[in-house]
Structure formats: structure tokens, C-alpha cells
Length: 103
Image (cartoon, rainbow, N blue to C red; front, side, top):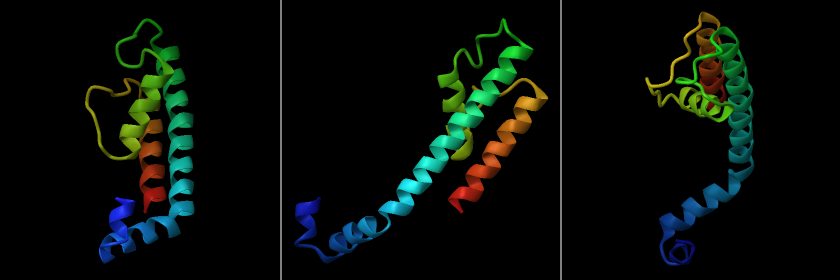
């Protein structure tokens, strides 16, 4: 694609735009990844302390972080839903922070 950029003007502008916005994109990525790690760990600890025998919804921290990434990016996936009210409120806070940071 970079080689094609030399020959086509719109691809050249697209590559220049990505180059200029690379710091902002990196900052956004770090914020969203950090937010999803923090909120995923909080949701995991809340859900596991409330129902320690349940390994169906959030069997490990990675699944909780995956759920938080889905929630922040507003993809949504009904297979993962926190069962406690506190977990649901934490998920709502993660969604709000995700929307505000992208906006």
C-alpha cells in the first residue's frame, strides 16, 4: 500500500494523515487498553467474590478484560453479562468512559 501511495494522490494523503495522527491514536489505544484492564479486573473480582463457584461467565481475568473491551467499543455481546448489580454498574462506568474517550 505504501508503494501505491507514490502513484495515487488519495492514498498518499491517507498515509500522511495516519502519520500525523499517530501520537493521538497511540494515546487513545493506551487509554482504552488501560481502562479495559482496570475495569476487567474489577468486574472479575466482584463477580468471583459474589459467586465463587460460577466459572461460566467470567472464568478468568482475560475473559473479563475481553468483555470490557466489547463493552467499551460498544460492540456488545450478550454471552457475557455481569450477574451482580455492582458488576453491572462498573460495566456502565466502563462504557461511559469508553464513549467519552473516543468522542
